[in-house]
Image (cartoon, rainbow, N blue to C red; front, side, top):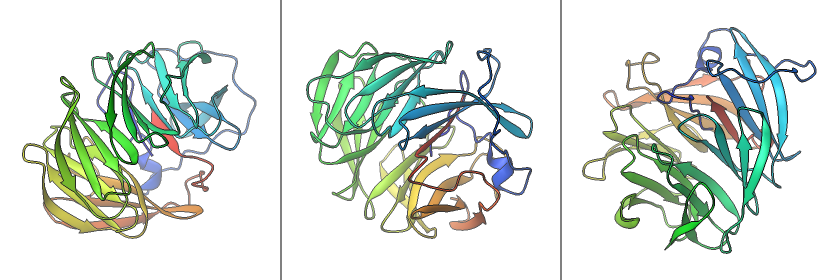
Length: 304
């Protein structure tokens, strides 16, 4: 799960339903004949089963489906351009460029060495895309138009995330139990963070000082000092932590410092786990009222 808001820092718009507030049911009505306004809050759900990016409009306590936009086969991850106008979807073979103003596919990026991309992230200035290509063991640095700026050899790049300031990209190497840190100016690897087994989720506190890394097979969250790249706390947190996000303010148990990770019991997504570095402990909330059940059917949630 990844959550991003158009034109603002990342926030968990939909956590109210998860943490005891009203759930946000997805409307079962026909697609709406309207295009989103700049002030609208949108939720994008990637569905590998039917190869679409479903765009929902979030209104109070409900979600209205606006449109299902075709993607390539097996969409895995998505990122939003800083201006909120474009989304880039990593598919099994290529990158689908999606026009969010008109809710339609706008093109495809398919550089020569892009094999099995599973993650994509964009810098805050919108000038570079970082794509983890697991099939070719490369981190590809692309322009938004698809020009290859650099190819960085890297084993099994499962997840890519850009720090809030935009100067560092963090790449989870799934099979080497490490997260590699890339300087986005030189596009060189500058540090390696050793982690538990199968690092997957990567998120940041709003001030950029702490990196949150979740490990699928080790069932822990690492809290990493972004200045030193040292793990300053490791928190046990249930089973199979698939992703991470950070509450910008509010939430349990400490404002501006709550760490959240989706915890999955394959094939059913069942729990949300929250933790705080100051208390070095976690708390788990059931997701029984959340309308999305299957982890295999939904791999990304994006709130713009």
